[in-house]
Image 1 (tube, helix red, strand yellow):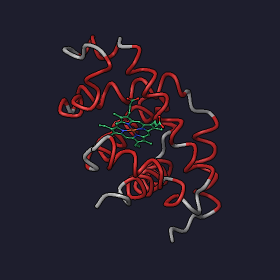
Image 2: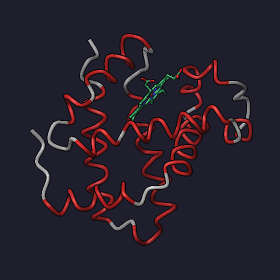
Image 3: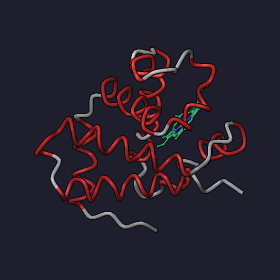
Image 4: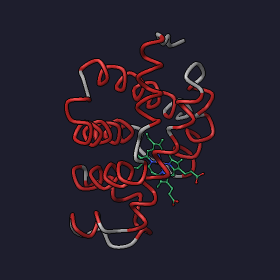
Length: 147
Ligand code: HEM
């Protein structure tokens, strides 16, 4: 089981309590689709994604980015049981959506970059270390139901 110090819990809770879900969510998913274009294949029914501009102005992408970010709330609320908290979402992404689990890491990296850009110097090395630990646990949990 993953151990979290009080300090780490504090960092994660404060990061999410001040998070601008609309802004960060849309920027994260669109960045992922632009930087790693092969991830676009899962969003073929979301409308045109032929250019960076088409992606960043696509309302379906923006809305889904916000949905993904809210998907992280369940990890924040269940820090001691992240694996179980993601059982259903892991089944969905593997069996139904057939999303390659490597893509979870790519999306996490985009999220880290978008948050770092927004927070600037407030995104300290300690905050980054804790946030990346948190995302690594989420990514592992989302990959658990793949077989
Ligand atoms: C759907 C979370 C990564 C592709 C969803 C939903 C959530 C979610 C909450 C909605 C489930 C529902 O409607 O019941 C997450 C989280 C991720 C992640 C927390 C990683 C941190 C990814 C990645 C991809 C992806 C990397 C593809 C590159 C999809 C697709 C859907 C979906 C295609 C269905 C969209 C639709 O048609 O409505 N995800 N996701 N997800 N996710 Fe993910």
